[in-house]
Amino acid sequence: LWGRMNRRRLESEAIRDSLLAASGTLDTTMGGPAVQELARPRRTLYLMTVRSDRRGFGPLFDAANAGASVDQRNVSTIAPQALFLLNNPYVLDQARAVAGRLVREAPAGDKARIRHAYLLLYGRLPSAEEAEVGLSFLARARRGTVAGPGAPPSTAAAAWERYVHLLLCANEFVYVD
Image (cartoon, rainbow, N blue to C red):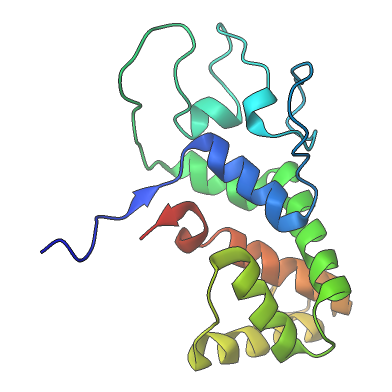
């Protein structure tokens, strides 16, 4: 009965910090001034909150309402959250940075890089089926069949960016089981 807990989504700050940590760009310097730009690699703790501005990354992922005292955050699962992860340039930049990190740190070869990607993003090794799906995805991306019929073939770097982006958009990245 006590051997498991219900899955929960990470808070907005943890999602953003996880993206930065996975890309290897998280600035862990303590103290200093707050930053306003989402693209700055400072921890989200140092991201300035404008009380009147309820749009953007934080409120979308249920950051605490800075305009009121609350004892508990809302937890919502809405389509714009998935659309943000799929389409926002910030997330695409982080996927590109993670792909570059995989190329730099992991041994050569798709299997080794897939293993490293799973360890980096999910803290576990991929199952045999997940590794096979990854290899298939990368092969299709290099041929240009991932984006649809008639799409031009991708470079190896672009194929890895697409694959990492796919892994970042998976529930396993933003939920804790």
